[in-house]
Length: 117
Image (cartoon, rainbow, N blue to C red; front, side, top):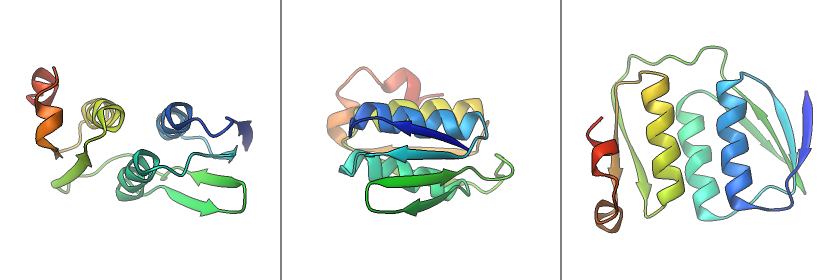
């Protein structure tokens, strides 16, 4: 298991979660961000079967055994541009039959071509 300290950075934490999922590698992350965007990404990963063990100043992330899902579902990324971009990338890379529901403010940003994937 790999141990990382990311100093509470939201962006680094969310990106680290995605990489652990794609690399199928368990991680212990010191000082993870606990912001709403981080919780949204954790929810997405939980839907994929990942497991999280939260402790005082760390979280242990265990990716699912397999990264496939034939179950169609809709996920919500709310107003988070970062989570929307990375969720769309994960869904596309893993060829999941999922839809992303975003806040109208996100739709005003240049995301439409990604949402159409």
